[in-house]
Structure formats: C-alpha cells, structure tokens
Image 1 (cartoon, helix red, strand yellow):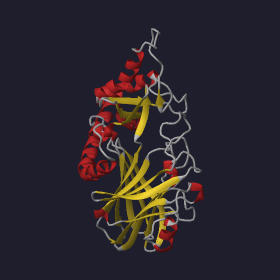
Image 2: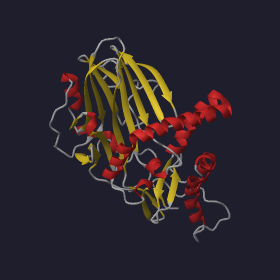
Image 3: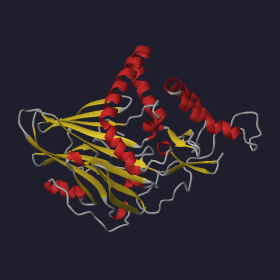
Length: 382
C-alpha cells in the first residue's frame, strides 16, 4: 500500500500486515526490494512499475545490477480451471549493468501472519514434496473452517504454500531466524525449526527461499517461485459446504501445484499475449486513461469474487462487499460487474446469478422483488 514496493510491508486488503519480504545480497551487501523492513537495510531504487491485466512488473536498479520482479496471476476469464487455480508466480530477471560480474543471492520470505487472522493464533508448518517441487506449508493449528462471518477478518483455515522447482537450484528454510542467517552470511541454515505450534508473536517459523546465483554478468539470470493459498472449503451456501472450482473433479493440492509449475511457460506466453490484446482494445475504446482505469477494474472485479463448485460440479460465483455489511452475493454488486462477465465470459455471469435465482425460488422468499444478498461472508445462508 505504497508507491514503491519498499515503502510499506505487504498487507491484506483490510490493512493488516501479512508480510512478504524480498532481499538481494550483492557482493556481500544486502538490499531490500520488497517490504519496509528491516529498516536498517537500504532499499534498491525502484525505477519502473508496469501494471497489466495479469502482470505487475517492478524494476530496481543499484549496486551495478538491474532487477526485475514480476507478479503473474493467470486470471483468464474464459478458462475456469486456470482462473480458479490459487497460484501466483513470482519471477526475477537479474543482470549486471556496469560491465562487471557481481556475486548475487536472492531471498524471499513469508511471515506466518499470512495464514492467520491475528498474530496471537497458533501456527504449524511443514515441508512437502510434489513432483519436481519442494513445497513449504504454513497454516493455523486450529483450522476453524467456515466458523464465523465478518469483515475485518483474514482467512485462518487452509494453508499457505511456497513452492520452488528443483531446477531452480534454491535453498529453503523454515525458521524464525532465516532472515538473520541470510543477512549475516548470505546462506540459510540446513535445519528447519521444529518447536511448534507457536504464534507469530512467540517465534513461529517463517518460510524462506534463497537463490545463490553466483556471478551475474550482462546475461539475464532468471528464477521463479509459486505462491499459493488453498482453503479446502471456501463457502457455505444453503447448508452446502463448497470447494473452490479448481477442485471440482477432486484434484489434490500436490497435483495442482505440479500442473501449475508444468504450465508456467505456456501460461506466461499466453498471459503476455492476453495483456497486449486487451490493453490495445481498451486504449482503442477510450484512450490511455480509460485503459489504465479499466485494467484496475479488471483486477478488482475478479478479485472480488470466489469461484466455487456446487455438489454437482456446477460453477457458482460469489462476490463479497468490503467494509460494508459483510454481505455476500449482493445484487447491487452483481449488477455493475455484469458487463465485465457478459463481455469476457457469460458463463461466469450465469455462475453469479444462479445462487440468487435458486434462493429467490425457495418458498421462504415471499416478496415480489429480488433478494439484496445471500447472507454474510463466508456463510451464504440466505
């Protein structure tokens, strides 16, 4: 929530901190490229920011290198399986700009607050293997699934996953001391912290990935990771507890992550083409300012919705109000988003409207007008 990626720590939309921290060690000196802490570590200069429908690209310069960090979420409205897949790719392109080789180590860390509502909740963590991937996992101990509704709340069931491919030559760690180890000597401990559960306030483990890149010259060196959050059950609708759409055929988490890694090159190419085509269409329709505004609306419209699968596999999609009345599937939120889905995939508009129509047809709805909403998030009880 700042003009530069190092101005502030990453946050949930409610404003609560859920830090992802990015550091780079260049010739033995550390710099920040994501997050406001540690305050004593200088920040690389952010020289560029580009926002497209599916990519956010930051460029940083300093200490003789150029570092490009990209967040890529393949949010393609026409492909429900990929759209609902809870994976974002973080990738780095690094090169020297001064004609001299530089010793470079990259570091990414996820704070345990990313998987709980508040920092006093107990957290557990673990290490898993998917085919070709090391996966670090983090979640609340108590897993109170769909146990309450509210607005100023963060999800505290399900698990956060940080996955890195074997081909990326990375070191990984689960430790509250991981960042200290990196800052002191540029490496990570080969021992995971095992004393759990703990809360973020009392020293729960942080998840860390470090890429020892060695000597980086004028040729670009690239690395990437997968960031994912899987909920298991995501919505309760009329007494039916529903899973996210990507699990409509029972796909297990490890296979989902494996497929996401396998698909990454093709999705990246597809996303770049999609961004180029949609951006050009938007600029033709209303000029540069309209294009920039519509790109933000594209992201917000999709981010406001949960795409679930009903018990028979039918897609159902629920929008949520933010800091209003906690309402879910609000008709006056469905209405302004409907042109988006009419244009990009009418099947998603049907998935929006079906829950409201089904509820309005029940004997309990006796009034001659549409329901305002279906209850309060995440319990859409009608």
